[in-house]
Length: 251
Image 1 (spheres, rainbow, N blue to C red):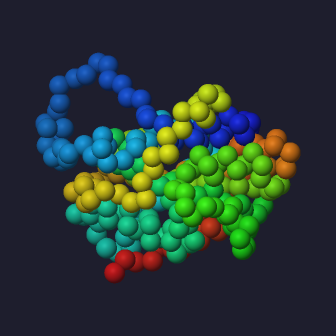
Image 2 (image 1 turned 180 degrees about the vertical axis):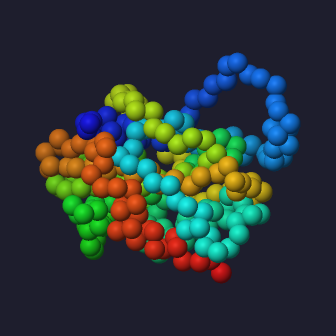
């Protein structure tokens, strides 16, 4: 199904809102294997980064990024979340995604939100300056600001990619938000992870997933989010250049 752009932008802008949490019912005593879990780390969300909502707005398509893509033949044992962030940033830089914002996911994960871009019908970034809307260099990165440009965007296809690194199951909430949420935007994304993430281990329970949000605009403000998307997630990563850039073995 396809939802209206207004609702879709509200949903994506909710990425900048504080997430809600809840307790789990029917708790049971921990097993021996649970007692032997990895040591807890300091929760770095309160003062370091804005919290990424969980579950998050429904995406067009999601694609898991294998560990071998990020680290090649290098054993990631002992790697930190900061190490993973550096690999993602390096790949995004090489593929032309030089603006991004970071958010925390609980106490053991993070999200990287890239800038909205215009793409062609096959998913390739449009060439030249038309790929990204002109921005004011004096203003900080704001996903909400870039998404709002879709209300007046020229006809065509648009895409926004978010990488999530977390131990939580990755799934969208499937819900539609209201215009009122547009008034409560928090432009709180950081341009880098705080140093405390270097002490947070990248464990076997962590997954790296790319969430792709795709839109179609027809030029008269009647644009729509494409749910499900037109293009497979791996194809998005391949044709954008991100897959090849991530696959470069780190030094």
